[in-house]
Length: 259
Image (cartoon, rainbow, N blue to C red; front, side, top):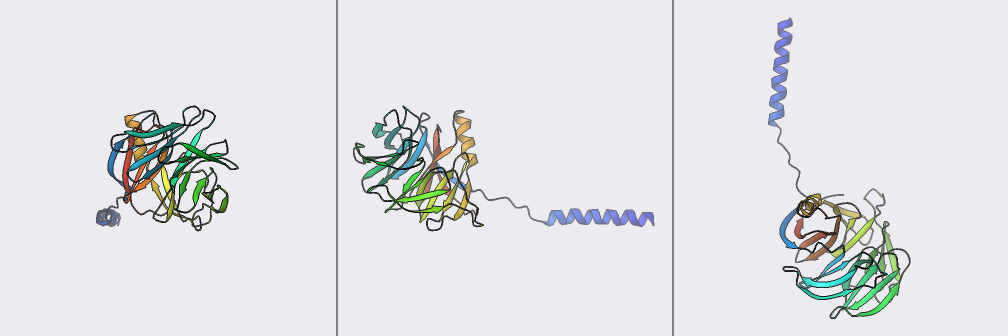
């Protein structure tokens, strides 16, 4: 009887091993594919990031070091550049109808420039903090570090409507930071996280989430001073992402991922 138990145990073990070997190994699909890599100035504390044609427009932060500039992605040649007053901490930027709009962090001021010259033309005031900024071709869209996204008039920066960023199960998501508008969706990174999300602008519901931690690792490996992911731009069906003090800009294709 004991021998039978031993043989049965051996048979079961072999069967288990055979079953394990017959099951296919599933390799998780990466959230993105790197298409190209471009240089990025490691002195830029990136806050806003957007293409206008082939020109990359970037806004940077920190008191006494905030700036707005336009440059060539491929070789970093600067076309135009302007410094913010030392009292302002620059935040998100966007270009709409020949104007560049740039938020400030705690000053409650949105600076307005002529796109062609980067000459300062106007300023709008707003309540709360300024974080990310983009546009859908009609409205300016901004974040303030909460779960709320604001849709504003370009003529006076008044609020037209708001949405709350939330998961499909209704849980609100705050720390919404840098913004980009592409393919009918708002794309955002969450402060302190190395991922981006896509948001339905009508409902605020998150449509996808993409882990870009690998890009942060590549940046840090080249320059140890690289900080968090912060910078999303879109052009020609590709996303271009960078971060604060990153040495590189990564052109990537995103794969479909659910939140």
